[in-house]
Image (cartoon, rainbow, N blue to C red; front, side):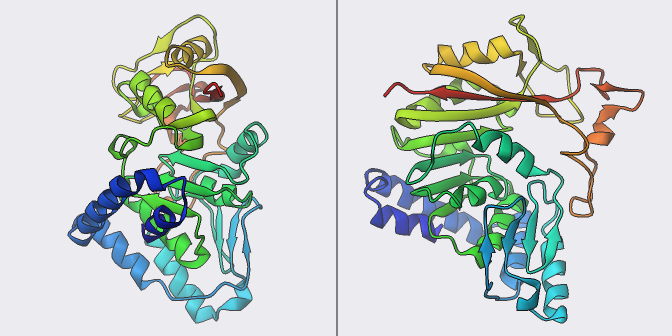
Amino acid sequence: MDRLLNACANLRELKPYRKELESLVAEQKQRLEQAKGNFQTFARKVEELPKLAPSQICLDTDAVKIGHFKDISESVRKELEKGLMGLCPWRKGPFDFFGIFVDAEWQSWMKWNRLVSSIPDIKEKRILDIGSGNGYYMFRAAAHDPLFAMCLEPQSAFYFQYQAAQKYLNLPNVFCLPIAHDTLPPMEKCFDLVLCMGVLYHRRSPLDMLKQIRTSLAPGGCLAVETLVLESRCHQCLFPVDRYAMMRNVFFIPDLAVMESWLARTGFTDISCVDITPTTVEEQRKTPWIQTQSLEDFLDPHDLSKTIEGYPAPVRAIFLAHVPA
């Protein structure tokens, strides 16, 4: 969070929001200092990770690479691996820490490749990633030299995975707040690009969220939203009775026409669906780095076109929508 404060002091684009962000950072620092449970546990694990200096950093490969295996001894590598394993579950990735391959549940490079070919050039741009997880997408974005990339991630394990990576990456233009999007103070016309990847279907009021995002985008700005969809254009929306693919907090799964209507009704223009991809066990799967169930456990074993509850199996689409210049 100190990186964010430095950016507020040095970047004119953030100075209009400096007072509110400084107040938010102070509040979150106090909360973390007093935290119990998982936040306290994961904070201690990151603090206990060995202090290391990577000889190289590579952000434009499928795995975010930090250092080289020759940078550290075998005993230090075992200590580091134990510490990283203690931050499970690693959902987004992969990462390579000094030769330790963190094989995350999601092969996030697949989604990144589908996204990056469609979004505008992000060099010197201001980016917000809502529900960023451990920051994988913003670390990949950092290879394109954005002005800054702000991550929002309220979940303790994922926030401290980000902290673990930044402990060694030390990227000055990437920062993360341990908050949900609706906790962020109003930052009208601040961002050039907002990513909302795998978040919208967890919201009880997706239109309210889209309105808030639109307000935060600068003129000419772009929203990239990736969400579960029904692969039709019948103006229908699925609202699960209880769980969807074993997820309890899934509310609205729109079809393609509904998603485009949501974006239009919330003030976006130049709306396009740039990708539709069924989620497969090649992209989302169980690994030693999650220690929980994954997609193969969430599908009907007798009919992989359905979830275990009988709904259509996960299909995700990426939509781009713009604010008029």
